[in-house]
Every structure is written in C-alpha cells, then in structure tokens.
Length: 202
Ligand code: DC
Image (tube, rainbow, N blue to C red):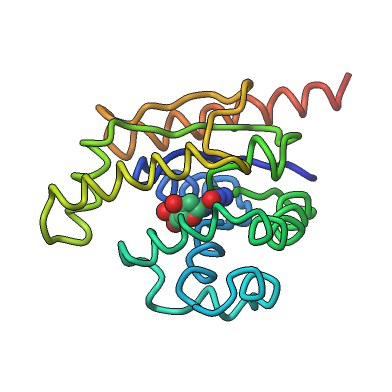
C-alpha cells in the first residue's frame, strides 16, 4: 500500500509528536524533514553542496535540536538549490511501499501534493514559544522572538513557503493536550484508510 500522511506547520506546533504517534499507531515509517535542513544548516561550507552530499548518518548528529540549528536550518531552507537537492529523497520516502508520515513545511504543497492525508498543525506563537522554552530553557521572551523570526522567514520565502495546502485539515493545538491532538490526527487518517478500503471493495 502506498499511503502518505503529510504534516506541515510552524515550529513547535506539535508536528513531531503527532507524526511519531500517527506513524506508531498505523505502522508507517516517519521522516522529520526538518532534520535534513538542520544538518545542512550546521554542516557549514556551501549549503547546496552540503545538501547534495547529505548522508543518512548525518541525521544522527547530536547538535541538531538546538535553537541555533533551527535558525541555521530556516536560513538555508530559503535557498532554492538546497530545497531542490532534498526533493527526490523526500518523494521516494513518501511514495515507497508501506505507508509514510512526513512532517515539515512544504510536504502537502510541494513534496507530495498527492498525499492521501494532509494535516496543517498550528498553534499561537505564544503557546509554541512556551512549549519550546519548557524544552530548551533560557529566556522565554528570546524564544518567542526566535519563533516569530522563524515563522516570518519560513512563511515569507519565495520558494515553497510554509502554508496550508488548500485541502489540508487544520488542527490548532493551542488549547489541546497531546492526547487530543494525536487523537484528532489519527481519526483523520483512520477515516481515509477506511474510505480507501471501501473504495477498493466496490
Ligand atoms: O521542523 P524544524 O523546526 O526542525 O525545521 C527547521 C527549519 O527547516 C524550519 O524553520 C524551516 C526548514 N524546513 C523547511 O523549510 N521545509 C521542511 N519541509 C522542513 C523544515
């Protein structure tokens, strides 16, 4: 079965948690596409060359989750040559046999517009900054400023800007706990799988 769940949205909206839970629930593979851009951002040197030479082992680096790596990723992600170099890997992952969940910024709009399920997971900047601050600590006002700066760059870039696909289901997690957010996402996937199975029988 080829079945893609595309999960897009801004930083710290809950995409990662939801993606891992959906993948575990349905036995799908999961790719956190932000990690690809984080590797390119922290590698240094020519970003396009770093993207072209990216190896699976790079995703295991232990310096990818910092605020700095997120900002570096957001900067290199605005470069069309970098995005182009990462497209094929993501498309192959999305359409390989067995079902896949990909989370990022442009999965439902650019990487896999044919995805069977598209979710756009969002929350207010304040809520997202508070969640990120609980993880990384430091000065909460600075974390909020970073979140807003990254939103502006990711939504404002010319190539594959962050936006909800026209046919995406929007999940606003501002006032939701993890269980409710995961339950909402799983229900959307379940409905689509059931519909697909019914269509296959008719
Ligand atoms: O999801 P994340 O915070 O790890 O992503 C880091 C940055 O990478 C994000 O600010 C923008 C960029 N990114 C992107 O442009 N497209 C994706 N599909 C995933 C991430």
